[in-house]
Amino acid sequence: MPLEIINDPAGAIKRAAKKKDINNTARIVAVNSFIIAFSVSFAVFTPVMFTATPLMAASLAVISFFMVALISVVFGWTVQLVANTLGGRGKYFHGLTAVSYAMAAPSMGIFIASLLAVVSVLRPFSFVVLVPSLGMGLATLYRAIRDMFGVEMPAAAATVFICAASFFLALYLTVTLGILSSGTLLRI
Image (cartoon, rainbow, N blue to C red; front, side, top):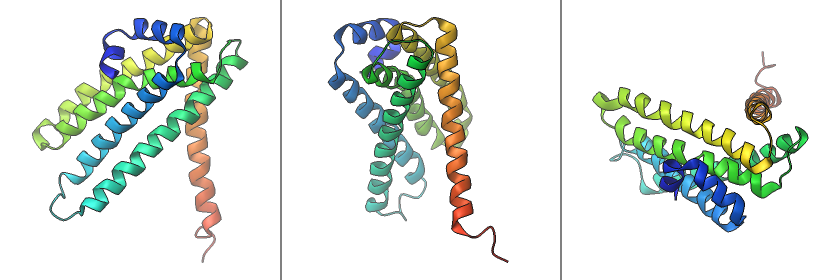
């Protein structure tokens, strides 16, 4: 599935917009989440495979899978809200499809980079893999928002910027509130 999207993102987006199959979109989210979860587990546990337990590796993989899936679902909803606010016409399916299709190239890039990162001599090449895969992911997100919501490219660019800014601002505030509410900042 991700390879079809990577080979022809524009065609895959048009087919998805025509079919409007939420089950296919959910499968793509699951496949991307699995690829990223496997990649994270592989990269983390390969250097310590003789000291880590299988339960630790499985726990990290399951948590990674559900976190990537949850972030995809929330980000898809955010894309829908922002794109519709900026003049687009779309439903949750359109936002989730845009996000899931945009994750295809980065998930494969992360997978290849995790394989390269295990061998210390090859680690710098993970940069060479990640740059185009992340760039393709962003380009696919722009294209999917434009096609799915029927907006022009400036509105699609604004949607991506606003969604990314809200994501990083929410992450910053969550960490800050966690630090402030723990009471460790005021301890003397």
